[in-house]
Image (cartoon, chains in turn green, yellow):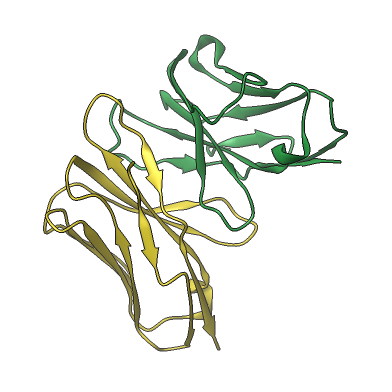
Length: 115
Length: 113
């Protein structure tokens, strides 16, 4: 499979629990992005990496959210002490290059439901 | 605040109709404009990345134009088919050191057979 892969596809968790999602980008892509999409909204930027460096993190993200990309390959997004407002689709995308003139390729997302 | 607006919000057309929708973005500080198609239960798929004023791109029955001076892009679908039903998203990229994709809310297209 040469596409962007996200795991798990679905996650149901109780409020207050920690969750971690994984994204495996297309192998030669150096940029990796995390987005969140809630019902009726477009994708909302969370953070992005260029290789292993996290270059930007949205101010909308609270300290409960953290992302890593060790060795510049796969990435993980962790949400600590989940809240019901965290319920959303979490999308990962990757692209090649250092600019935004190349398209981003998206994974199928992880749908998080916090009950 | 950088704002990207798409219109209409939703659209219903009959099979065979041609249609178009608009993406409006800030005309200053332009770097690139992306169009994506997002079908239900699938991941967003890139259609076009446009960087030059006056650019026109085409993929099959779908084409897009770009006017960076006035801050808009049109997406056209010729002879709509039911499989074109999806949400069409545009994303603006600002110039400068702090570049990122700024997304519109999308136009939801339903093509009735």
